Amino acid sequence: MKKKLVTTLLGASLLLAACGGEKVAEKPASTEAETIKIGAIGPLTGSVAIYGISATNGLKLAVDEINANGGILGKQIELNLLDEKGDSTEAVNAYNKLVDWGMVALIGDITSKPSVAVAEVAAQDGIPMITPTGTQLNITEAGSNIFRVCFTDPYQGEVLAKFTKDKLGAKTAAIISNNSSDYSDGVANAFAKEAEAQGIQIVAREGYSDGDKDFKAQLTKIAQQNPDVLFVPDYYEQDGLIAIQAREVGIKSTIVGPDGWDGVVKTVDPSSYAAIENVFFANHYSTKDSNEKVQNFIKSYKEKYNDEPSAFSALSYDAAYILKAAIEKAGSTDKEAVAKAIKELEFEGITGHLTFDEKNNPIKGITIIKIVNGDYTFDSVISK
Picture (spheres, rainbow, N blue to C red):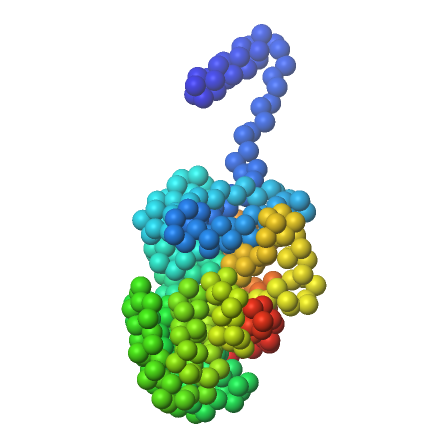
């Protein structure tokens, strides 16, 4: 159809010229895109949909704000968000669809394993990719165009060991971790190494497997050592069970954990809140932070979704604004220029101030949350 139309127009133009009519110059077709196409991938259905929905809600809020304020380089963002169901193969298929669609950059994936799979193909294509929340260390090792907004598993383990020494004054610590989880083991190993470097003695280290519900045998061994701190690096479902059982076997240690603790209050019955009282855990931001920028974000999110934004929401919101700043710095959507601009950014977001290190991981502070009376209270912001 297109070729026939061009031929017809050309013939008509020549006929006009031959008959002495005025030839009207044709306006060349614009090759410049009218919108900036940004792709996004996340688990919107499936077992980890709670994370994907929360994260992509933060992203959509940011895109709506950016478009309402003139877009990027005077163009509106066209966001194409695809569901990968928490599956690595689905994630790569979604990525390929977005490439065919013409995306200039990708925000995603959300959880670590699909993020690794997508990063490997995005690195080959050179398309800038920002995972807001994928913490697994090797995600950004795929290529120079792969970035993350969240801190890594080892980084938070190291920072928490420093916090344990400096803030809690601990001299001894015990660790109970999930041997079936790269996340749990990764944080535990980093914590143990840095704790010993800080002069903290690891007096016990116990493990368990996915699906375990009874931890009393391991915790009883730990109780015999009476450590100053019990380090519990897992996701909130397991964390709550471990904390309750730790108190039941007589452990009075201060419990410390990584960002997987976010959400634990919902899994613990109020009658058991004493078990998680004064637990400290790492997170990416605090809704109790009085910073005006943070509070405005929370207000806008609540108005749009009638819910409180999680750390995943805040990280994805920041990812959108990082990409905006990079495209504006680059002055175009050229993939190499945008990746270079991301690398050089100094960014102030909801989840704090960040720059990127040589492996495209953020250098940023970690927010420490303290659980008090079943509420997440803001304790401090610390860095390595």
